[in-house]
Length: 260
Length: 260
Image (cartoon, rainbow over all chains, first blue to last red; front, top):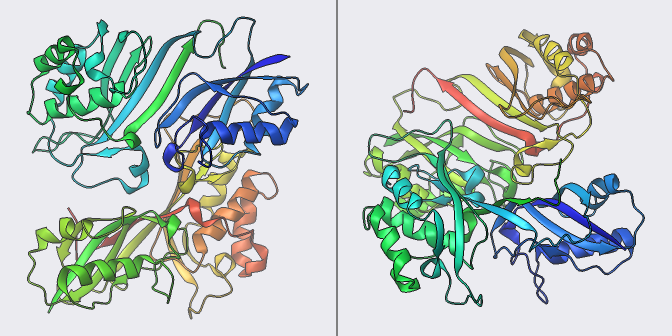
């Protein structure tokens, strides 16, 4: 039995999330179907984590077992020919013994994209949250930095979470403005991306952080409030969950496998 | 009666082109419907030119007459609130007497986007033609430059054209590679855009130029062949019509109006 790891991207717009569910279009099901057509096998695909309905992935990693003898360099093109246009395999590797796509991940990075221009960008609308009124980016960056390090993130976690511990560590959190974007005279900031890297993320964690951070940007809360919310360990203290379409699972890092 | 000019963008994927047709979704019809909801008037919207089914626009310009007293600065937001997500008004101006959105245009620029990477870009797939095998960009640029100036473009025009003259002037034609794209060791060129500016374009002209140019890039024809095809004034001498989804009406210039 071989153990294969795939680096994949998908546009989540048309899917009810990653995890297979009866009678719904999901990323997992599309991958399993494509592998079935290719190999004749009924495999179970496991992702580094689930993504919700409408959430995208640039660098999701999946794992599955197969008895197929298809050479590792052939999987990418063979599967891409059998997948819909909004899912693509970017690379394939033979996973070493002991590799577990969930537990072996050392870091994960999410990107949340906000279009802070007055008018929407119709060509990227599926990947952006359009927020046409001014935002204070400096205050948002300060608020974001307050979350760095190891904390109990219960305040920034859906009440539906079933995890026994809500302690996670954020390694990096930055806001990157697109090259051709610049603030207008009224405080709009063009298109910008919030990148957050940690050792793991709770259910809706990035979207609740972003939803709260937008309130900081709007002046409804201060950067210091982000730390107070964190300390309260109360979901009710944080802001709303930002819409799914702005979120993209950007990168998952492993020591055990590297995609080239 | 007021005469209004609008600068608009649209993602043409979901539309049967610009021109209104019975029982089909078109850009013109969506615009007329939105103006009707806003003003109660049945206006006729005229575009600087038609775009075909699946073709996009970054900077299409349209014109219509209205008796509405809505201030010029209000049209943009008022119409955007009533238009679908894949059409957006970017600016509105009061057109001066004698302005004609078709005849007053001094220059038009089209962009055609090619993804020459091995794998498709799922996030931009609606805006690109995916050509995964190597292309000789240097030869393509040389072929493109051979078309500059005033010529009879009958070879690069659909046989369905009803124009009495096929003489047009191309002012500029360039290939711009995206910043983070670079050729791979096997001759792929990342994502690049073919920009063509002229005083006017014939039916399918840009798409036939691109379809022929791709044959030059593939080594099936030489750069010099482009000029020979031009001289033949025979549609049969040129290559195929490149698919619609890579094409975008980029900009239309006027002396009589400026959008700021």
